[in-house]
Length: 199
Picture 1 (cartoon, rainbow, N blue to C red):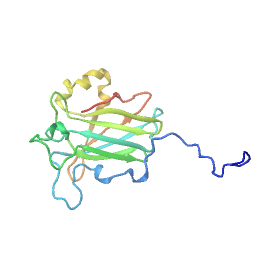
Picture 2: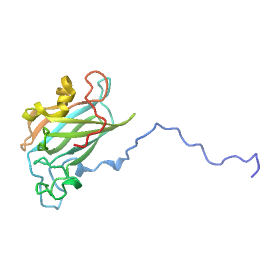
Picture 3: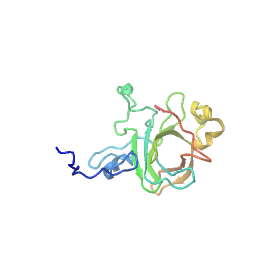
Picture 4: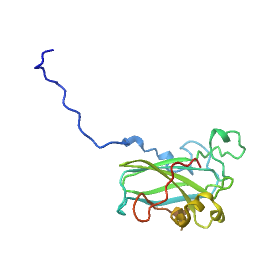
């Protein structure tokens, strides 16, 4: 090739670093863990709940385009993991993993009230992915649970413990208990985050 030959291909565009979540990343079956896919007879055991809240940035504005992943025990406090594969208390209609994408920063997630695993208060681990962060992890707890007073995570965060407790906010028309939980990713009132949480 001659030294005067030019590259016929246009330069690659410069873009913001990922992570990128394609439009099909949304999976409606993961946004409501109280039901099983259409055509399947079965329903998760336990009290249906609705988690509602907002993901906020350091300025108190809604964080657009966040992904939230939820991981929890079933109503009897058992996680669906290989270690519990033979557990008699595994709920065959409940996987314990959910995911939703919020374009606005507000979210609503349907699931069941988790049971208390050994030594813990009922809780849900939440992982948040958003522009500019790889991931952050926290746990949410529920107002009115006696075991909150002795849970090791709540004890570890001390005075910040109330920021991890979802507030009860009545019931839906069909009887699901409603809890409110905002996630503040940085700045004043930041939600306590952790390196990683298995349960």
